[in-house]
Length: 255
Image (cartoon, one colour):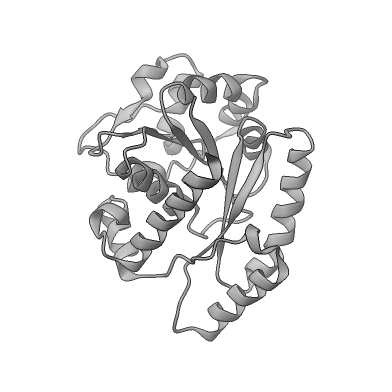
């Protein structure tokens, strides 16, 4: 039975989807059967995962409405060990009310994640920013969570918020473990970025923040524009190395 890892953040623009996409690719490159699921109605995963050009992209929204079976929304990628469930048509609509109602219905995500975990070694779930209804349901149905934190001053304000929210959910899902906070978009030439990283590490238990930051590099931007994970497009890049290293740490922690 595979592990379910939720990628969550208090705010958008912190590298959450980039982290989900690149960790999924890094796990798959290690030979782990990996499924990446996008429950964020913005649907950003489809732009960065490297789907085959012209491939139809039905997703979780079609699965929830019964239009497609699970097997039909499990899409192949150029990596043989990586499949993806994108958001689907909901990403092209402005009204997400019905989607949220369907996702948060009792038992829906428990059943979906259970089915996916039987087909994979690890299921990575990309979520909307914040701790709204969808994210809470994802965390209630998951056993592991990872929180990306951008190395900027706002991270100092959002960190206590996300930790309090996770503690509330752990009270109802004792199986949920916070695997760590991952510092992202780290700018080695910016003193402010270094101070934020130092403060976060000083303020939290040592085992709660990953030792390695994900640096801000041009290769990440170029990979995103090309619709590919940076760990595949530029394996020698420093950000690629960071994501591969974090995947190794997670593999050990999650067993």
